[in-house]
Length: 150
Image (cartoon, rainbow, N blue to C red; front, side, top):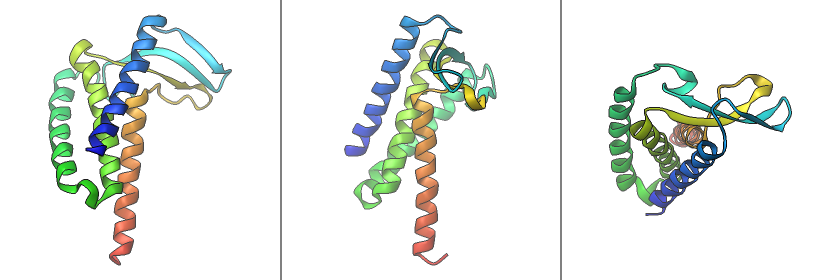
């Protein structure tokens, strides 16, 4: 249950921040929080990470549904037995659903976190949750592999 609450919290934070951007900024507006380093920039993405696969809305919807079903099944099976993996999966679940809501309702994902210093693609809270969750999963695989001597 805890892991589904974590996912719900990520979804809520993601949707709230996107709501603030959509209602308070015009597309393309950029507010420097740290000049030439980090800005809030209102952007829309019709593709996946780094803007790949533009205009493939239905592909993303189908894939996301399959991923969500797989993660929910895994969380039910793993639960408290593997807390690190379950935390990681809950983060990926929350992020996937956050971006899914955007794609399903408008066909595009609202992005706004813009690291201008390194010219990194603009992203959002859901993207952060997915990235951190995948990172924790990779760490878990590494640590479990070392524990079992592989």
